[in-house]
Image (tube, rainbow, N blue to C red; front, side, top):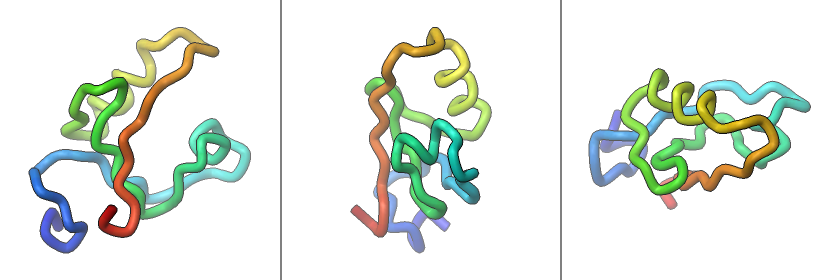
Amino acid sequence: MVQSLGLQRNYGVLINKVIAGSPADKAGLKTGDVVLRIDGKDVHDPEALQFRIGTVPVGDPLTLEVMRGGR
């Protein structure tokens, strides 16, 4: 899967569904995107993604590094 997505390393979380109107949708995430980092910290699995997002106070901004279409 890493090779098929064009990843250079074995980390990141594949987004398999974005719900219309959700914060992810409003942030511009799309199905098939791979979240690589949140605020400069690598994301290795879905639990890490949820933890990093869940520990940020509501309303505070996050910086996501996302790969889309191999870029």
